Image (cartoon, rainbow, N blue to C red; front, side, top):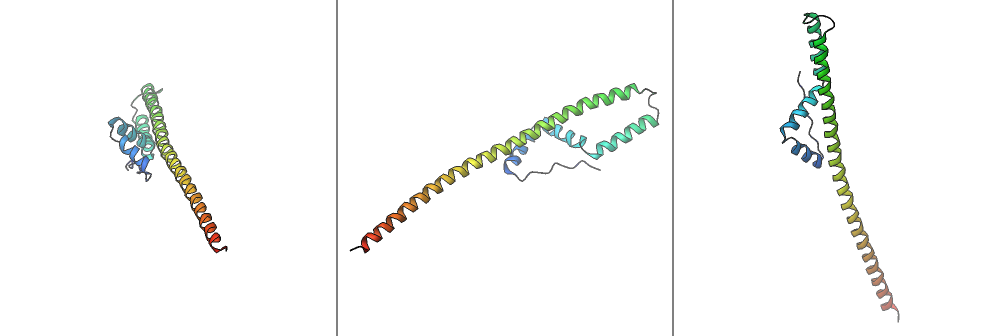
Length: 137
C-alpha cells in the first residue's frame, strides 16, 4: 500500500502554481502529510496501532498515554486540514484570476470585432451608395 502522488492539473495556471508551491520544502512536507492523513492507509495504520496497543497491554485502562498521543495527533491533523484548505483556496484563487484575465481578453477581442464589423458595414454601405450613384443617370 502506498500513498499516491497528487495528480497534476491540466490547467496551465494551476500547474504553474503547483510547480511553484512544490519548490518549498515546508509545502512538500505539508502536502505529503495531508495526502497520507486523507488516505485509507492512514486508517489501517491506526486500526493496527490501536489494536496492538490494547492487545499487547502497553498500558492499563484508562489509557492515559494513548489518549494524550491521540489528542496531540488530532491537534496536528486539524492544523493540516487548515493548511490543506488554505492550499485549496490559493489554487482556486489562481484559477479564478486566470479565468478573469481570459474574460478581460475576450471582452477586448469582442469590442475589436464589433468595431471591425461596424467598419465593414459602413464600408459596405458606402460601396453600395457609390454603386447606386454610378447607375443613376
